[in-house]
Length: 597
Image 1 (tube, rainbow, N blue to C red):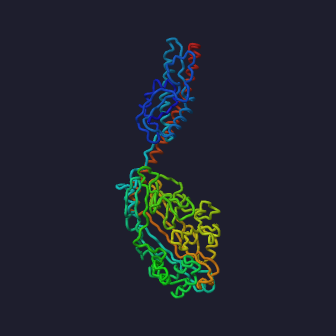
Image 2: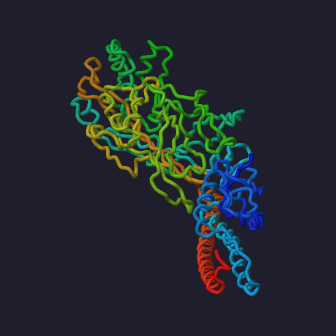
Image 3: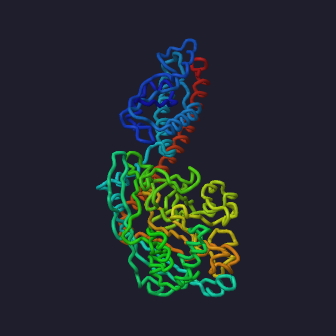
């Protein structure tokens, strides 16, 4: 489809110099991809009537006297048309007046008149030069787009190679909370005193994505293998270190087993010699152990798994399947999740808004998003969440935007009404007025699990007042992502989550009989992190950062040149106009009525 641009050159320029517009490099007048195939022709704006000719006007114009129409065989960006119209409408009245019509004059004045005519004809060329300068200065002349096909998640592209198996190493660091006064808590309802031990570090995501399937609708499906390899040299101690921790089975069964069966549960707790707290190794707490209470319950629940752990089962399992957009049809959708576990929305929450699958899996984002809010889905917390721009940093010489999860993402619905559908528990949350907690029992088989930021960062004060040893700190406990904005790649991130279990008073179960209040009890917190390695950073600097820097320098130079041309032409035209006025006055004084403007 043709697109038209109307410029404000006068009729004389249109008729005599219209073809020079192309020859002088004025076209293409686009900012987003119009082709260079263009033509210049006279014509009138459809919405405007041509001005009436002055009496005695001998002009042979068939259109308005101050317009040229430029047809381009490609769509043109509306901002380009606006800029061109703005420039022409502002400059034309000042510098492009109709060429004075002359009456016959004595032959002796011909050299002076030729000077005046020459000055008038040169106006058009100067106007064109000034117009070109304005285009460069205002950004009408397009810059090459930094988006490349390599940003598409398709076999054979750079993005695909990094997407299947990241060149960076991923780690999960765990800090476990050791209970210093377990007996005092059970027998005297004392305030729990905790100390954190860690980190205990594991390398994860060693294996590439599996079951990769390209779909017909520009999406691709895959599974994420779950692996964990312990790294002793990056850890506080051995996996076999003993931690005095909350008994996961005892705390969970209080909520899972119906109240009418609590007497039976109490008997089984005593028969299994279980208590509210237990001594377990780091490995057992994280990855699973056979629990004596669950073995007792298996007698009445034959299908019950007797193994429990914070992340059991994990090794050898898969997260997914995920289905994400490749970006081939629309680069702005690259890596956005279309489906998770075969569904386009979640079913854990009470409202459609909270059940939406928003954003990516956090490993990358659509390119050229700038500083706008980013969304990502985390299966660990069973929801999509967002991060907001905080600041620009440099990571191994690469400029990155840091995004952080803000306090309002975990705020109570009274502060952030969007969170109302994430509130599924009314007692502990005190009718949804508690901040900093998210109950995930609906996606964790009904277990009373609450997630938060470490040490209840951004949480209600009573969460830290009830337990001694918690010290929330933004620098250590916030979640952040460092994103390179041109490609959308996450070059560094730290995802930090705390796992808490709920328990409270009970008149039937003896280990809870002296507990006087309901606790949201911290068991452990994790920091999942990765950063671009030196080799990849060097490749990124040479293939992405350096070309963009060169492009910006070229753009700056063009802007400076355009500004200089624009200002220079204005000054030159003003001087020429001054000379013309003085020449006209001189001619008028010499020849009187034989020369008039």
